[in-house]
Image (cartoon, rainbow, N blue to C red; front, side, top):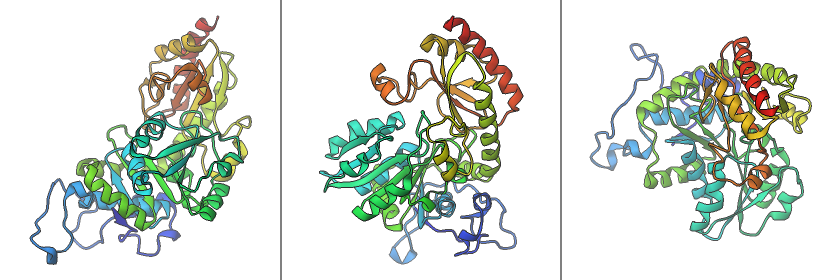
Length: 401
């Protein structure tokens, strides 16, 4: 766990710098002659310490290794929040704050459109600890207020949602939460801090699977949390016990990935929009889902909230599951694999990956009909990607016919 940055970005000046600048400089230790420009990997589990007068007890499981602390400061600066912490996975970043915010008998309100593992956590795991969740349809604006109970503690959303790329306006939810003394928590993995400044739209706690865009190279597993100092302190205390610490080497890799976040997101945004418009003209495609398209149900809201449409595109192919299987099987440049946010383009079917085990009816309610394919658009040349996807669509068309 780490507070706001003290580094080449002067303390107190974080708000005067753009996210691209903070992604490079925030959180780094102070500069002096002879010090390395790139903070080194501190690959040590423990640190010399004998008694309380020696200062803070450092132990890498506690999340206060120098590499871990640097990331906490950097994510706090990027999100414009008081404090931040890095953890060993995106699910750890979701779970630790929820455990910190709830006790047995408490209640959570959550969007009905969520990443599959998050839905399982809320639906199956937290009830074992006495915490119940009510899932709210994104399109039912009154449902959020109507579902609040005296024991409600948290409202949980994703922006955009995984994998159907929907958006809910966090601003009225923030007003509702603050009036009722609730915490508004958001998974902004699909947006990144480049496309969405969570604190500016009233979000109290923001989490990311840093495995995705923040790391950006599909070579690490990590998660980050940013929010109020007291909450992050409590989440860190729980993490001491549960042990989801981020390895120092992975922390170093994540910091390296963050340095190019702004550049990569610019290319992800541009490529995904170009492909979404290209797919919209193909007869093999029944529907293209991308916030940058005018027929997206949340297009106007996305234009207000986001500074970039994001690198994700979802398709519904004519011909259902068979067409989706043929499409993915014919690809040669894009890789068929779970996860997202890397420099390479990855394609998956949520029915096989993030939402496997769900019935057809459950998938339909989650916005995942037959023929649904999720694309994480990378930074390759967009014309090369079109050529590969043309091959996939031709194969899908044979299944549809």
